[in-house]
Image 1 (cartoon, rainbow, N blue to C red):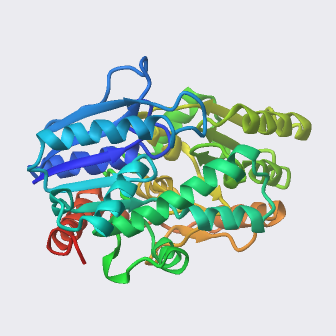
Image 2 (image 1 turned 30 degrees about the vertical axis):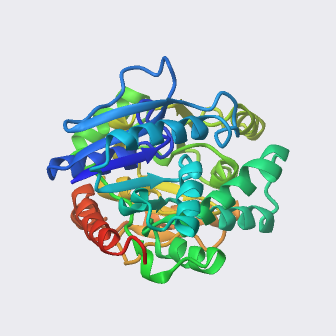
Length: 399
């Protein structure tokens, strides 16, 4: 099968969504599919990751934040048209997010006025890692700070892109049942076209280590073997509520340390650094900044607990990675479709509550079902699920 993947985030850097489409692509390539990828690239981002059987087609990333709809996505559209003229034999177009907004509009136009177009004979599958309107509503409900640019440009265009994607896709893939429900509720998505394929994990990369290895890695990084390490890993942003997690540290004993792995925009990182300073927690919080994906397992393997107090999530890969490493996870903003031993959900985001839940988990430890997660949520398993979605799309591209 020949697949065209359209994804803005592709490594390097390994930030944001990048590991998800990368791992999915690797698993699909192992099955013998040929894959070409349109992705956003900085000129000096380093040598692009190119798995065997994959061809990378780079597009210059947005020059200024929030301008992707008028810059990179426009360039993508015209390059896509040129590519399609030479590649009429592609079996599936698999797009992730808003990068392909102009392609969604183009195909919606053809569906309405030229339904016999050859372009439409190649089915489009759109992957939703979140639902823009639901995120926007959540920001308003929780009175989160929304920039002028986001409020009047980025969020409205993201919602517009979602709606066009739902309308033009032969099949829609959602990373959680909640996202699927919201797309049906807010965008009137056709239920027959909606599928849930949850995020995955690489069990060869994310796995438990021995106590000896754990203690050695702790010493190498600068932690004491008797410290209780609380980990948060991912993009630092308002909705992740890192400030609440820092505040929760004030209610924990001094041997509890917080490890923050990841980076964010200068504004929010400034708030984090100020909160650490004001709270007098500089000696109990370690920040590593951006960490390449292949190196991130160490953070889980040395930690006692992973905490993600998000306002909302799709289905974060970082949680699957934590469970696969044998680290209990305390989370919010989403729920898995099935129960996993070692995964706990926050019912409140008050710092005192977060702190008390952390101590309760660590004072009453249970085994984490890492082997089950590695089997059920492997990327190879996710690639097999997508095969079924592709088959549906090829049979029902004009449904």
